[in-house]
Length: 402
Image (cartoon, rainbow, N blue to C red; front, side, top):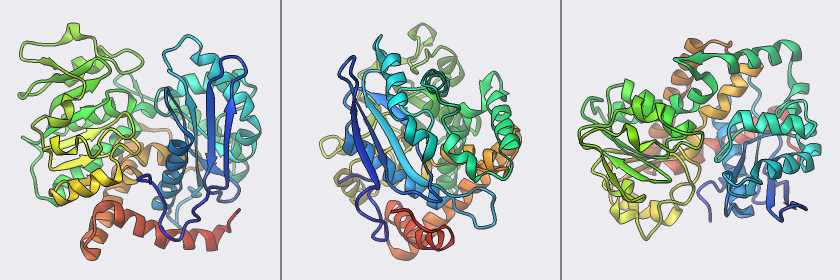
């Protein structure tokens, strides 16, 4: 059973579940549409070797929950259903781009009618957009256009937002990490723990992990470890986050030439056991399980990645007093920023975007922690309970497509 499985008020079976086989390479791709709201579902497409239909189904259910958690009846942003795409292919393989183009071409009927997608693990937004254009699509989010009051203005606003940069980095690459960082800071505030002196370790320094590291470092936290495909870089006194970020390749791999005296290279799984307060898995799914959870010493695990902690491991961690802040809450700003911008709740402005993300995440974390305390449950169960309350309200307003 996956972490992102539904509260009781969500159907157990997805609306659409299919597997595609590439006629050129034999690679397999999957699409799961968990739920439609007003005929549309939202969720990125990932590419990694070993990606399975079960994994994609769990991610799609998680997207249903993320959409519900950001529902605001006063906002222009219309909550969508949840979906996810996944391709079993190493994104570094020379054939990977061709596989992506053929996958998107095969999924074109769904992308044109009911599935709005974007980047996820292993893929950048630029790559997905380029492949989508080659596959004959107008946009990766064209299924949403019929829901817009002014499609031309909305598309221009989103294009302008993607063109925004902060210190040379695209706003779209920073939005999700801003939300993750705010989740960390909200948890620290709730525990009355100062930012200065709080240590953070991250697994993954790609788009999400990199932006999270930047915002947390700027807030005064000390990043003591980061892990990429080549191993873990550790410095108990703190790493030079900006130097590491500036040396990354397109897959988030750090150039070791920028390491300073005091920075140590350790094995790839060393990030789990680093002496830290906050552990941020920001790359792969299923990385913390029953065989390695005992190595974790952090007080909080904040899930920037999708489904990084297996349920049985989370139960053991909770028993040990380690709080797991769930992915459906923590990384939800990535998706929400797109729709706040497209529907017009915010403009194409970094300051406005960051302020809205921070305010929304603060409110969401507060609701989750308050519900957890009231119910005597862990944060994930509290988030699921909030979704169970919101789904009937969304269904009553917009109907359901089953």
